[in-house]
Image (cartoon, rainbow, N blue to C red; front, side, top):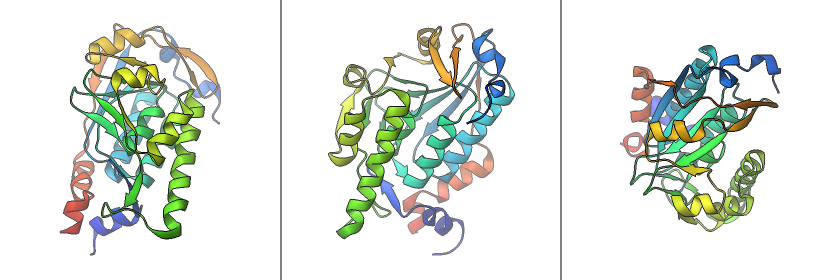
Length: 251
């Protein structure tokens, strides 16, 4: 296998089964509502997704957005790409909200870590989250000593994110070791996510007034009256998204 498809897979051989200064924080995050940047991830977590979210966070920061909302529906994806997304989200200078939607969708495997890394995590009715056990690039179980190494690393990643965001650390470990999955109602009760919202408008009303920590600084969200600006993938990201799909890459 040669070309971009092989390069995309080489970035991470394993899939997941199903300190800046306070002045860098945009003043609008704690001030007037302004606008909210809406990103949509509907599919695999891969290098294209990581690039898309990184650009979205950068754009939201430059525009002084009240928040960047990532609407997420994913069956999983590359571990390396998930790590890059988590890194960008934890270090973001703008509040990041992950919204698992629409109904019938979910945040499976890699999506678990992306969701938990958000300042605020929400789910739509009829969604689920979990099943983050690592497998090989072809979807098979990892064998031998490598299985234990990869599993332990993935567990540590989940626990670190959960601790950082004040979420359920024990559940994060079970999602990896036992592939547990829960509904949106259970996720709120278990403190895996923060709330349930029927749509983006309902989400922005419910997160309005919530306090989050951005680069060590408390920020209050003002989103109830924010203008929603959609930001879609660029052409190069859409192309990479297609060729990074394991089925397409295999062909």
